[in-house]
Length: 141
Length: 104
Image 1 (cartoon, rainbow over the protein chains, first blue to last red):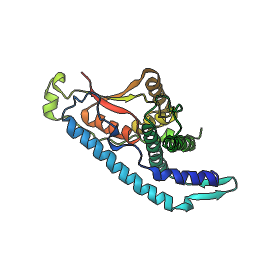
Image 2 (cartoon, each protein chain N blue to C red):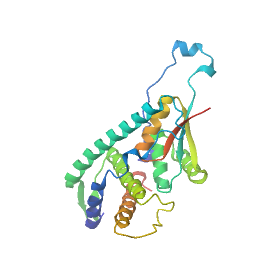
Image 3 (spheres, each protein chain N blue to C red):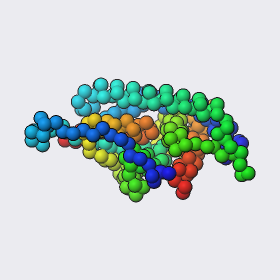
Image 4 (cartoon, each protein chain N blue to C red):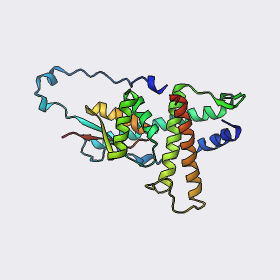
């Protein structure tokens, strides 16, 4: 990536977490045995994961040596495990931004560009951009 | 590489003697792990998550991803409640719209 891309990346990441905590339900039907306890278990697991990802993110953002200078630009050095949690982080920002935009059926059609919607649209698109780069790096496609 | 991901480790749950003695209809009902379509997750991302969470080869993951995309949902697994819960937790950590439903 270029230096400008790195700056955008580092500007994007502090938006995590962006998806509302109560966004997801364990079941649509709610006829699970002990459904309330099961939902609480999911909420707790997601909260724990959020805290863990936040800590990892703080470490990543302080560790600028991970951006290695190459003849073609900067190379972000990540282990496979790092890549997985970073994908989760980026998708949290993407989904959360989409939710803040009102969950439009077509994410590319935001009705009004306003001071309120533009940052969400920017965050949704940029997180998607970096997500695709990470996936490409993982699969080598 | 996504192609060489390790499937999640799940606790091996051996049936108890009491469970073995019961007719099948009395055993714990199955639970379906379902992934629902949403307009925000990328197709490549969904494929990747299926590969990581279930340890599936890319082709199978793509099949289910396309089913989600074209039919609105895909049943990814039928499991015990404990395992279904585990899978839904994993999928939701990636922010996929996944739920578990009782298979009646």
